[in-house]
Length: 216
Length: 220
Image (cartoon, rainbow over all chains, first blue to last red; front, side, top):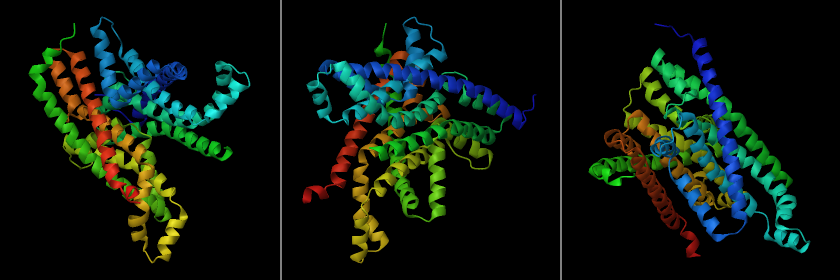
């Protein structure tokens, strides 16, 4: 039997942490892209589109992320797509992230006074120009803090990928636990690494929130 | 291709799982909110050291995944002498999790209380406790009630993870059924909708409770 020293445990956990970071980045990038498309669709003020997006948000916010992952992982293989754990995790986290981001951004865009849209109209700006030069620069400022705050939820969400067999930090933790029989130590390390990843994000979000609240 | 009829013989499994999920969520919500209010008061009005301790707890829980907290409690604590059943570990993990989040939310509500209310309470001869419980707390909760509702729903949905330590909840039922009839997609789809139903029901329940709790507004 191989003996695991503390150094071995931490080294292996850190190797797995790379996958947690990569998965978080992929999911967040994917989530932002999908949420941007959805936000654009919502801004067209088409009632059918708005209804669909509302349903989308309701479904993905109202069901457990774990269930969404199971459905992506087992469901898509049913229709003949052989999907890997990585792809299923990225897909489900992307959908989950986008559902929350689109809702966060909706709030940010809707806080802008309606008069700004009307004023831009009077000044002869087109819809896209209004969006580009008036709405987005302001909305971006407001949206930055809560979006970064939500990225913490994405990093924590990646832990669920361990359940469908993707080897990231949590999965590495359970595997090391099975090898060392030291669950207290192993999971404490795992928790600390997650904390080290998430706390800077939380802190940034908090600082940005204060900064922009003062300037407004 | 889809065969939902294959799930029918297992309906009792789903119902059993649903009941467990509702039970645990209800217990965790009540205990979590009670602790949340307590911690929020300690964080906002307590001594500096107490406030710091609560803050460390809140940040530790908010910045680590629920599943890791669950594994730590279920696998880690027994190794230093606290033996817990899966059900107990799951409930404790949910309470600890919700308490941390609700502390932060309720604290924001308390912080937004106008200073004048505290001063008025003092002038009227109310003690700290009386001012807190008869004047400050309900409007403070009312202000952050939507956020609190969402958080409780998120924690309820998070209970799906409890299946990983063999708590026989709704997700456990879904896993059990799909391992028997190999109808994974149907099983998970139905379960997802049951969760959605629970989430909507919970929001309705919170709205009803909110109406009762904040009925003083209507009396004026």
